[in-house]
Length: 134
View 1 (cartoon, helix red, strand yellow):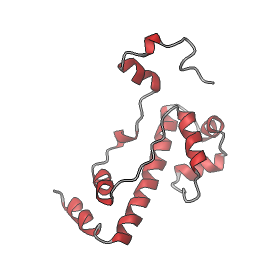
View 2 (cartoon, rainbow, N blue to C red):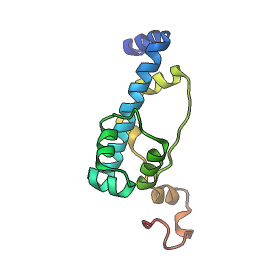
View 3 (cartoon, helix red, strand yellow):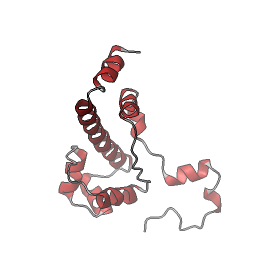
């Protein structure tokens, strides 16, 4: 195990540290993923604001990890705009820390729905309108 991994796991014994660390990391990762998905779609912040029906200021706050008052409805609007599933879950602090340590930038990418359906051999049997923006 690397020194950082060992240090982090030792620090997780402190409950206050564990939660502060993981909340900060979760905010940073979520912000990075929103930015990565926006760029993957070739959108500006204004484009994402329009697609998600959020304000430009809200998009800026999200991409800069200012998430303290972010509501679940806003998260769902972003998921719909990106045409992805929003997954919320609780997990142990140790699992959360291991995920942080093992993080690689490619973890931020989300394949398109069409690509996933093609991979599963389903896309060719769907109606022609499927996959078109509403």
